Length: 79
Image (cartoon, rainbow, N blue to C red; front, side, top):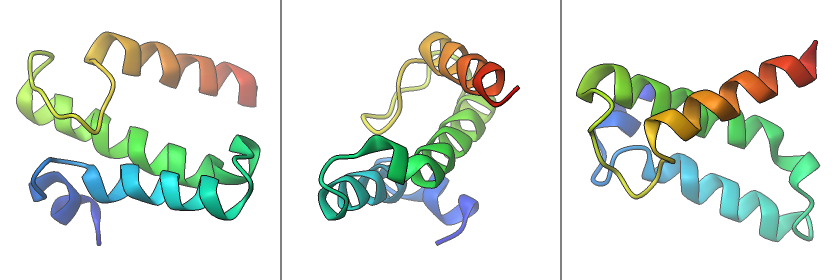
């Protein structure tokens, strides 16, 4: 699925959250092996909050302020 489909899924971004769980299970819960799936979820969640505003709710995403903090931390870690 693409971003548009994942945003329109019920709940929004759920396929991307499931992809993280599948990746973690496949890789003995090594988060470092699932960075692409985590980035994909955060991309979807960021688009969700841009569309719905910070008060939007979906069980698949962290709250908007926590998402922004995570995005900032990931960007800093990449250099």
